[in-house]
Image 1 (cartoon, rainbow, N blue to C red):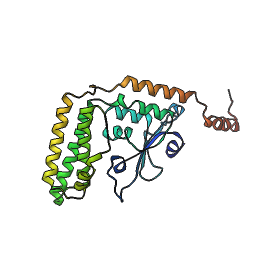
Image 2: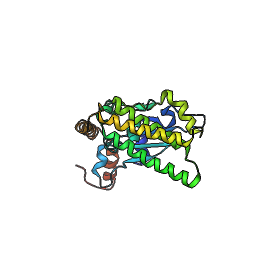
Image 3: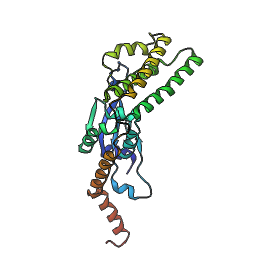
Image 4: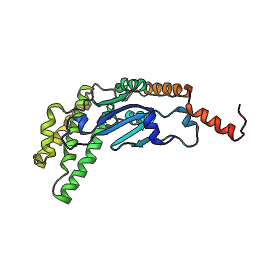
Length: 247
């Protein structure tokens, strides 16, 4: 089975991410698609394991195998958590609906460290751009402000909302380079400080509910193992053709 076939035939959840999901799309915006696939359990019984992620098969499409996706979500990876909360869901099956029902189990105060840690790294890149080119990449500055706002609000409310709502026009003004860098820099510092304050009294638990997520993963793996695999007939047919005894 090719990696692309895992996405084509075993996807459990697919959504649109990027500017379209954030409410920041313009006429020239790409459509970034993200998804989760469940590799059949029997593929893990081989020496060569299924891939943890697949790039494609379509352009701007990227998918994670369910276990890898859950691991990253438990670590409060910003991209993964936002994928789980996309308002633009394109496909979801029964397993995908169970995954979405677990969104709260992945959320914890760990998000403060991961979101702000990512923001610090991106801020350094913007500052390097200013030193080298005299200006930051304004699109990246816009998304950094969006991420810091999302982090602050998540810590304050315990819920992750990725559509920017009323902040659309102010953020697009940043993208167009209409806001001076010192003002953008000041907004970043303010949002980071507000996130720090929110983390101290956040309604989120200190840690995610790992046991609940693991129970879900075990159940879907077991169900997959018990399900009839069309490939078994092919393997048996090859064995008979080669004279291998069948039991």
